[in-house]
Length: 129
Image (cartoon, rainbow, N blue to C red; front, side, top):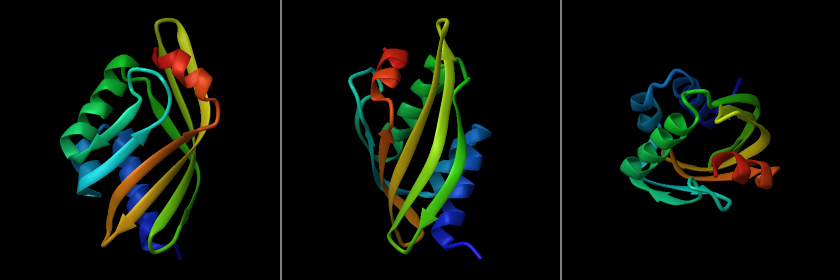
């Protein structure tokens, strides 16, 4: 039996893979805060549904729709979750293939904050720049 926060995140990642941003956003608090590391056009802090959806749109646009996330595992409790993933994409003759940990804060059945921990930040910065 999995934790409800694991189930919530599995639904969100599955919807993201299908491009179903309505379902993705329904799992996020209205005031979600999203943190992207690095020094590239996608780096920064994004607040609320509109800014996070804008970030997702830029990811899809810049990668020509090739961006994908494969889940390795999800560890979840009542307030936090860590999703271990492999992120891949292609753009302008370049390929991205990096391991990441996504750290989530969750409350009342919604994701409230997200931190992307990319293991090879230099590769991610080069790819998105």
